Amino acid sequence: MAAEPVGPDAISSGNPPPGGWRSTRDYFLAGLVASGFAMAFSEMLASFFVSAPSLVLTIGQRFIDITPAALKDWAIAVFGTNDKAVLIGGIVVVTIIIGGLLGVLARERMPLAAMGFVAFGVLGYALGITDPLATAGATLIPAVAAAGSGIAVLVVLRHLLQGPATEATDPSPAGSPDARRAFMTASGAAVVLAVGQVVIGRLATGRTQSVVAAREQVTLPTVAASPTTTAAPAGTTTVATAAAVEEAPVTEATTTTTRAAEEVVRTVADPTPAQIAQVEGVSELITPNETFYRIDTALSIPNVDLDTWEVSFTGLVDSPFSLTYEELVDLPMVERYITICCVSNSVGGELIGNAKWLGVPLRDLVERAGVQPEGTQLIGRSVDRFTVGFPTEAVFDGREALLAIGMNGEPLPVRHGFPARLVVSGLYGYVSATKWLSEVEFARWEDFDAYWIPRGWAKQAPIKTQSRIDTPRPGTVEAGTRAIAGVAWAQNRGIDAVEVQVDGGPWMEAILPEELAIDTWRQWHVEYDFTPGPHTIAVRATDRTGYTQTSEIVPPRPDGATGYHTVQVVVV
Ligand SMILES: Nc1nc2c(c(=O)[nH]1)N[C@H]1C(S)=C(S)[C@@H](COP(=O)(O)O)O[C@H]1N2
Ligand SMILES: [Mo]
Image 1 (cartoon, protein in one colour):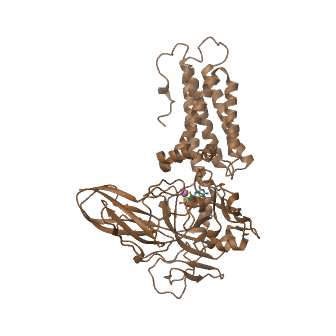
Image 2: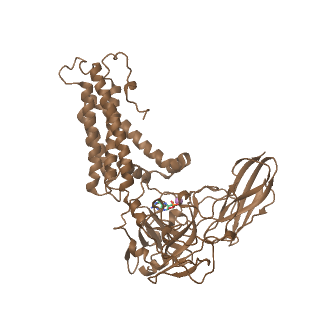
Image 3: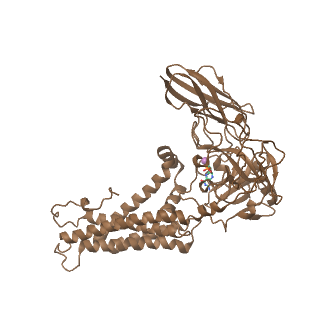
């Protein structure tokens, strides 16, 4: 907070400038303090009430929604995954500066400046109620708080600057050192209070995010392992609850197991050692939830109320229906290893991860709804209004497609879509993987374009066959024999071969561990004897259809990047 333009040093401590120290700068400072205080107060109150939106976040959210694609690409390119933090910081700074200008305006025309704060409150309210989880009444709280507290602080500071209106021509007493001290003290106090409110707001958010607590109460369906299987390494039980899990672990890739209530969870075994590359520096076969990439448009993670949450199947169906979380969890489930990735992933990028998903086969649910022949598009709607759309056909063509509630043996992490999300093998996330799912709707293919389609991304988006070098990393490498290793993926098809090339030489066949599933990435490696000097390493993968990934370099937009991943090293 040392950088705040307040405190005694912000104003020269020498003689008052001609006309007193009540310069434009002082009024600007008063405005900055007033708007900063107003924002902090409003944000703190918003964090106390679940249905009251944060105005700063909703402004940011609407900004994201209307931002032209090109600007968004630029922001992601420049700021990477910090783009959201930069956006919020930008909104705060701009708002405070506008507040400063209102402060200057307040010098002569306080009512007009007050109108400015009211306008802010009104704008905040108008944007705030667009938050899908906000109520009209609760939204009044942060909006009124922002306008009211901003005006109040400004009135007080202005009063301290101008003093009683008695002797307007006399700079005293307002211009006296005492009055000045009073102004600075009041400003400083307001800033301290604002900071305190931000801190309290932060702490409160952690508690009102009731979804976090609700998630911790969730017990995933328990797997009673099949008694027919033979011994396997410990720790092969696959879901969160340890209770009622029998000893005999599962070794088949897919084994039907019986639960007490005749419900069925078909679980998958943990990867065997033969399926895991024992190579240092290669991506883990299963990506831990903590490091799994996260991509979404949500500035604040939807705080879903598990007691009222439902997912409904609607649109062009014969029998629409809804499921509560309890009902959903009671349905027959499967576990599947599926690698999901983002279309924005550049060649060699990190926006990809592999997890074990627990969920209901989408096909079961779609059949229950009875989709009509014209329902050629499946729309996945989120509580945050995000949408995806993909061909209904993908539900029936034999690929893995889940309405998932579990990720790597845990309830879905909140950032990855708790309570439920879609996971569809072989389709990029933006057309398939709705997090915080609220509705699965069927429509004609030509009648609806999901969130990213009008923003310049392809409507059909199958994942492209790709490969990535994880080690060595670009830079300096010691001479000698070491592994070149990475991952390759062609979800829904499977990877058959990976080849590595150094300095344009012959393509070397990489070693692949046993396949975990055609829906997951596959680790690969070669041992290579590095000689001193600069070297360029390239990789390419061939999928089970016999297709070798193209060397043609195209950017992620509109339907996924292509080109060989290359890494440059200098061997010493
Ligand atoms: N509600 C919601 N779901 C969403 C998105 C989103 O912005 N909002 N982004 C999609 C995109 S673009 C991707 S790549 C995946 C990423 O899932 P992850 O964050 O769990 O890795 O989520 C998809 N689901
Ligand atoms: Mo994505």
